[in-house]
Image (tube, rainbow, N blue to C red; front, side, top):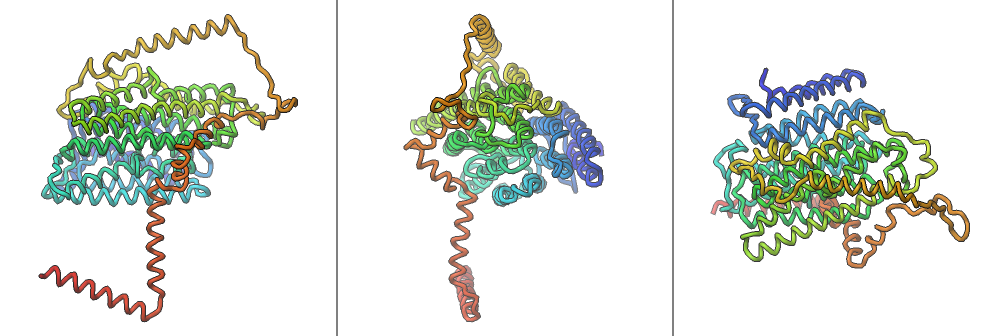
Length: 606
């Protein structure tokens, strides 16, 4: 079978099957060869005309510009993360890890290429199962978060099936998901839309289906976190959202405003939670949620600039979020902890890891000329364009969404100042004095991701937007000079370079720096008296306007999993009280059920 669409799925899957019987070293080699060849096939698919793969007379797989774009970046990110994983994966999980990794890539490729509802549901559901299995790798501490992940994603799979069933009925039996164009003329159409929307939100990690990501990030192996919620799941979830907004439905202004509001709320609620975290994994987990808000906000505008911005931010986030998780993973492998209060001063010991974390932190914070700034800039332009010409009420709501997005970006920068200071720039604890840089494969993978952050910032128009993203918009030509406004990355880079050189010159000329020891009560301070990088943010937690919201968050009021569990337990306790297990009570419930069913049938007949 020479069809590239078939091979790009079957080759990594065959690698996973063969890895069942190979030793770990050969699993690594075979996984690298298989994923590298899959990347080669993905690039071939990108440059070829539209391809199809049929099974039993039905088109199952098909590519277009949007699926090509997603397919290439699934392969790029999986290869880079595989390079990172070649050494220093926990010995207790690496054999299973190199079994799950190629299988996951195969299933994700299947999602990107599926044009048939049935094949899409199968690949989508199995890719969600991979998240659960990756979480179980760390069986000692990951069981509860894996169960939470499984239930949320499993519930979203049910919504996906329900939404597709509704679309199947509305469209008169059509199963090709590339050719839907449903209006909102009936209640069933709205049900289909919101079911599919929530399914995409669960995969990407947007509110209210987001709560599995911080827990998964805290408990799963760091390589698994970088691969799935940070990268591949984001690509698939936002890819599906783009399909919903561009191919499935005729989107109205009301729907756009609802989606944009959900995006803006996702940004703010998640970044506020990230701001107060003391665990580096959970901090990055909440930021993985917050950044989805920008993607949802951009795609929710429904206009070309906003959609390009949302899709570009999807790719950018997968790049720098993976880099940040891998940077933290490198530090964790050397220190044995992800607790921000227990680290500091590691920039001198791990300079390459620090550079990767610094670039990732600046990129996610939207600092020019890195890639995160460009995609946020496009999202903002798309929001303003959508507000222009809308009704007065819609304009007010859309502009509030924009304010939330800009405010969220400022809080992201504040959060990563804490992240960098707490890990790399504060006082080095004595127990870490002998730490050295991580293995070459780890920092090489991180440097590759950092390089992409720089390239996609400086050459945003020439490479990612022109080659991959703009062609994904059917009927929307690339808006050349207006797309980025007056933004010139070369000028920005020159100004930053001049400021950096001036700063170095002033430092060399003055060198008026004094280092003093800490004294407490006239005595030389001990290490425990040093001020950690997280202390300032404790005040934010205790501010009177925010304290109540944080209290609610800690009581899981915004966690759909916890609220659903309480709801189920509430009714189960009621039923336990009503059904005592006695025979006569059981007979009464049977009789009552029979009477109710009889009444329903008689009412239906009449």
